Amino acid sequence: MSWSQNLRNPQEFLKVGDEVEAQVLTLDRAERKMSLGIKQLTPDPWKNIGERYPIGSQHKAVVKNMTNFGVFVEIEEGIDGLIHISDLSWSKKVNHPNEFTKVGEELDVIVLELDEANRKLSLGHKQLEENPWETFETVFTLDSIHEGTVLKVTDKGAIIALPYGVEGFAPTKHMAKEDGTSIKADETAEFRIIEFNKDSKRIVVSHARIWEEAKAEERKEEFNAKKKEAKATTTAVKKVKESVEKSTLGDLGVLAQLKEKMEGAESKAKKTKKTDAAESSEAANSTEE
Image (cartoon, rainbow, N blue to C red; front, side):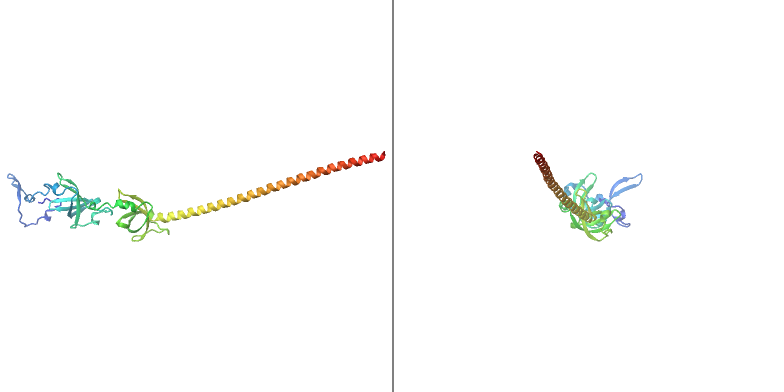
């Protein structure tokens, strides 16, 4: 009935009472059966398609149908193609094509692959723009902080809208505020980049990491201050101890000198006493004589 691959029901193409022109395809006289075709009355659009739709060429297409894995579009009558869900946007994570487009909408597309034998055309939409993740890599560097708004909260975490139309993911534990509560949907806060993967287009952010690291830094500074104070105290005590030891040694020196003097004086006194005794004895002997 049609060269288009999107025809799902004849009622989409014809209705009872319509008069159509058709071409006889097969004829079985014994069974009294005849097969007719309508599309055969028009040229096959896939003939020489490589010349009209070479890889890399850009075209406009109309959305005809959507599935979980992509969007089926029609470039012209009978020429259908598929835009895979991963080829819709560079920056947004599209869970279902209906989040990005709708049936009947016109999209700009680029030919990515062409399988003429199997009549398959792979198209892309995001490829029409330069890959912004090359630039995002220099903006959303690890540990950099950016303002973000919570778009959606799930059991595992939350989707965060970051600058330049980029979305990041914050695990539940990283949504905690300093007061113990969690950031809610539509709230705006600061988030730290804790993971960036250009290839998988994944950005993981954390709000909790900001204040946790701030507290850790405070504890570190407090510890260093106490450590410095303790070191100063130890140094002061050591100086006092050295001073006391020097004083003690000095006192011992003075005492030693005093002892030497006293011992010298005592020895001199003994010598004097002996001398006097000897002289007294000689004087007495002289008198007796």
